[in-house]
Image 1 (tube, rainbow, N blue to C red):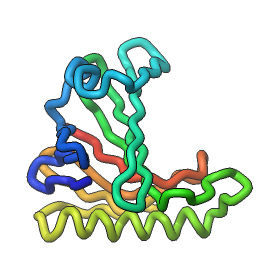
Image 2: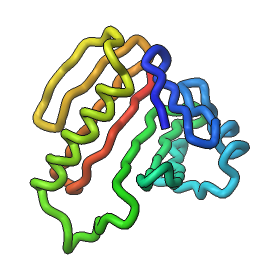
Image 3: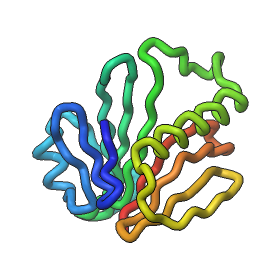
Image 4: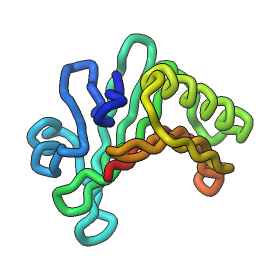
Length: 148
């Protein structure tokens, strides 16, 4: 999986591309087995999981009407115990560092503004924002791409 630093597009291992221009209808056509979740009117979430090399990936797309608003990405080694019994804040903070390194590799030296907060480092581009964030309320760490 790769992120294009010039557009924020995500290129999946199967060749499918998710971008700011991906509509809800595009998503359904590309990923017909992806089940929708409608937490409130006009907002739809879709999940997608796949493996690449020795990693397990989970993507969550958030749509408002037809527009892709954000894409959340989580990955870990295949077989890693992600149960609450194995959870620790230290592990999640380490995961955030790992995700930041992955983003640095993906985005290279593409020009962007950087804003750092307690949650993580946000990279701001013309097409949107991307960062690796630890959310202390839900205990999870993920990469979030927000499109303008």
